[in-house]
Amino acid sequence: MSNNMDDNIGLGRSLEDILEEKGGWFHPLFYYTKDPDHYFARQDIKETMRRITARNLIIFSELKTVLDVLNKAAVPAIILKGLCLAEDYYPPGVRPLSDLDLLIKREDIEKSVKIINNLGYKLLGKGLPFSIHRDFAEKVTYHRTNGVMPVTLDLHTSLGPYPYLGRVKTAVLWQAARPRKVAGIDVLCLCPEHFLLHLCLHMFQHRYENWLFSACDMLLLTRRYHGDEINWSYFLKNVSDYKLHLPVAFSLKKTAKYFGRVSPGPVLEQLENYRAGIIEQKLFNYYFGKTGAKDKYLIQFLTQPGLISKARCLFITLFPSRRIIREIYPDSGNNIILYDYYFYYKFIFMEVWRYVTAMAGGANKH
Image (cartoon, rainbow, N blue to C red):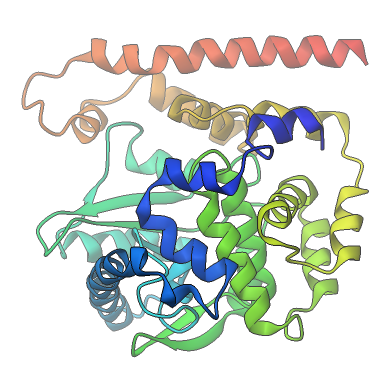
């Protein structure tokens, strides 16, 4: 991994500079991660901890509501990321929660959507229609504003960011999932190896903004298990089987830079010794510098397997039905403005052309 990439994402910056930029919401988690025995003596984080505790109580109450209705409909769900850690692994008021992330089986996604619609959740944001989110992003995001506070719910059918989404076999995740009790709720969580793998991918996805949460979660996970329950050979096998060396090595290296080593030395050494193919490295390098929503849609389109699925997505995007336009612009009434729609997506089409020509030029050089 090049030093230029390290510089681009701030590996040369101090944690103090990053903390000042992030603000106080992250401070309890940071100070606990750095010094779990003495963090509570700091008076400057007490008020933030109280606010985090209050917010997390609301999030967990909403989680219980969602899981109760899913369980009644015989829809299993695996809770992800901070939801599995904030209550039992961290002390109260340390790990702030921002939303609900659930892994749902693909065959249950439409049933799940109907269930959460009945709770007042609505598809979030302007953009692609539900079918494209489901088939390409393998995640649908919903928002509810009619409760104590607004809550965002992400229903995933796969894990990881593009261009790595879908590589991890979800059947394996479900087979290895472990039952736990979180905030008094019976839940399923990923096994330690898959949990760590997901945190690495999530940190890579958010490498320009909220990576600090994943870094601290990775450290806590490995501290909690003391390395004994984490089968590092199995972890590396998953990385190798799904060709995730580049994003995983990036996340482990960045966490070690700021907080200390997460994995045994030979693990990171083995990952860093991996030699990616030309196309794999080019795709990684290209995605590394992209941060916008339009870039995300482009990566989704280019890396989605199957010509038929690509053609279907392209056709729906170029020739949207009135139903899809209404779904994207729900407040437009009878005024369906195609200009706004095509203006939004023209930049994606232009970027696709630039990317394809750049890749073709790079391939010709080799």
